[in-house]
Image 1 (spheres, each protein chain N blue to C red):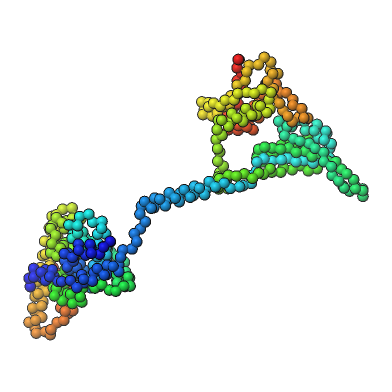
Image 2 (cartoon, chains in turn purple, cyan; image 1 turned 90 degrees about the horizontal axis):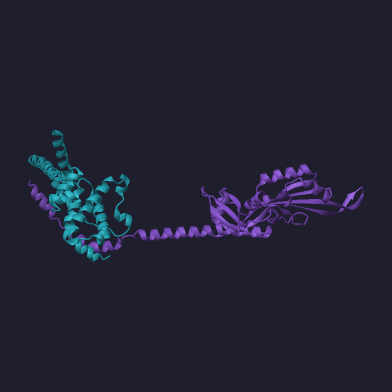
Amino acid sequence: MNISDEWNRLRQQEHTSSFENLGSWLNEHQPKPKKMKTIYKVAASIVLTASVLVACSIPVEQEEEIGYMIKGISESGANTLRNSLSALPQKELSQISINQVLIDNIEKDGDKEEVYLTEMVMVLAEADYEAAVEKRDRIAALAPYQKLEILPIEEKIKMPFYEKALSTVDIKLVREIPDSVIVERVDEFLKEHSSVSGNAKVSTDSDGQRVVEIIVEELDTSSSLEIKHPYQNGISPRISISKLDSLSLKEIKERQVEQVKEVKVIRQNN
Amino acid sequence: MKNSEFTNLLNPHYNDAVNYCRALCAGKGISEAEDIIQQSLLKAFEAHSRLKDPSKFRSWFFQIITRTFYDSVRRPFWSRFVSLNEQAGTEAFQVYEPSYFEDNQWLIGGLSQLSNKERAAILLFEIGGFSIQEITQLQQEKSESAVKSRLSRTRKKLKEFMEASSKEADASRGTGSAQHSTKDLYHETSQVINESKSMG
């Protein structure tokens, strides 16, 4: 037995007949559609990402607490109640309104009669419940009330969907207020609440925090620079310049430009 | 994708490729060899448009057959029973005739005793007609000497198997035994080989 002959015999095996059928067999076994090309995958992921971003930025409405109202009903007269509350700081007094309310058909000794009650309302512009409770307790200590309660002030707010989603898991986004908006707000506040119009400017200190400088002209007397407070018996009392530095500027900072570290008044000579 | 382009490329190498595949599957059933050649043909048909140099078609196609064979050895046991024709549910394409091995029983019997790598190396050399350098690349070896020594070792083994089979056949003829069928001869060849292996 020769191994070379064996190899030759194997090499000489003919398969012509099967080759003739190969073409039609390949036709029946056309390759399956190819998988998605990379460029289509990239395009699909871009479209998907864009759709998600668009969907997330669609504004949705949400009821949000923007502050609290402390509402009290007292049998004391309006003046008595006002006097009792005068012990409160001036800023808090400006947030309070007192009105007499007529309540009809109250039965007393079998007869129906009209009764006057005094309603006290304090509006708090901050949604800080603990601060509201603390103020309510202080008010309750100053005068007797039939009823004294804290009511939330809610407002429908439009916000992007992603922000709403974040707020549901108690993550709040802090948006930085642009310098131009701060300047606008301070100028507006000064125009509305004071007899002078300052020229506000926003600068950044060494810690990278923003400081508002209100540049006013150097004045001859302290009484020349005054802030108007509209809520006090309908009269606008005048506050001296020293109070502008303390009370009123604090108020500016808290109410108007909460993202600002400090508000300074700079007096300049002409 | 045109069939004619592929079949034109394949035509000169078809016989050798089919013989190579069957010999590579020595020791396995004919249906397994049939599946491997069919899968290789489909793979090559799908991918031939990406072949940059048509002159390398032969080595490329032989490599596809070799890899398909190795994959089939590694695939799960149960899936070896599912043939490609059954999966597709279409008319069967048959490459190998049932009588294919009758003329080559000695050689195939010997090849079945080799390891997969040894068998691939000797078949690439003898049937494929590839050089040592090409086989080194096809088998992804680092040096040609490894392939040379593998071929030398394989030839020696094959020669021993063939001689042992031949002696056994002569002995059975001398005793005036009845005419053996192909199946019996194949069985006896394997037995002789196993005996010679055990004798060392």
